[in-house]
Length: 359
View (tube, rainbow, N blue to C red):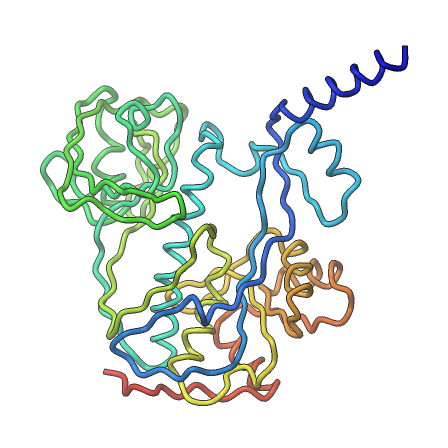
């Protein structure tokens, strides 16, 4: 009898461990110093001993056993798969979306840091970059992927997301469309590269369900057709030097602020942090706006474990960070990069002075 119970429990355990469910755990990840990840060529740098850390979270699909176990663990947030992607978008695209967001964050960090130090960065619009592909749509059937960049429609160049939308949305459903696409390759560690040659894809537009406008300025007439993708504007930036940030296996946009602060620190004289151990989370725009991010409670645990004494977060996340903190972490809320720099100066940090004279 006892042996039978043991066998049953073992089998139940095996089944629960192997049964993957559509729930994901968000757990504290790592707080990683940004400085060692950065390589800068063509610009003068100062190897400060300052520590500015980015922080991430672990996102992992749960088994039935993991779901049960998570309810007895601290600092674990459980969310359904549907909360992590838009309706109709397969959860399998989540990793690629995160790596694209990180690539965008690195670009924005480089531009905003250099802007802060006095550079004007020439910017070129390059196309419409795919951010998601809805299942069972013309785009999914044509095997378009996250990070692919559409640069032409029916022989005419397309340099923005609205350019693509305007070229497609008012066509009759079922129209044959020829897309010019720069195909992206995302490595297993998250590095995004593009094919040297532009590909041509043929697909038919699909009817838009319901009535909605195209969502672009100056175009208020209802959309008729779509391809089944989400898009963002693609840009190319002419930087005064070469900046490489190694974010292997890290996705999402939330390291933007931390990377920006670290770049400013390395490209300028003096200690930006006043020699405090700093962690930061928040998206960054090329104009220095700081945006909200998720998982701040879990990130707070990670930065405390890593020895940070100051944690800079988006203003709307201050209460969340404080509720998760052990009380020994100084938490500062900001909405802009300039506010973050001012906060650091109040802690004894230097005003940024570029080591290389801006253009």
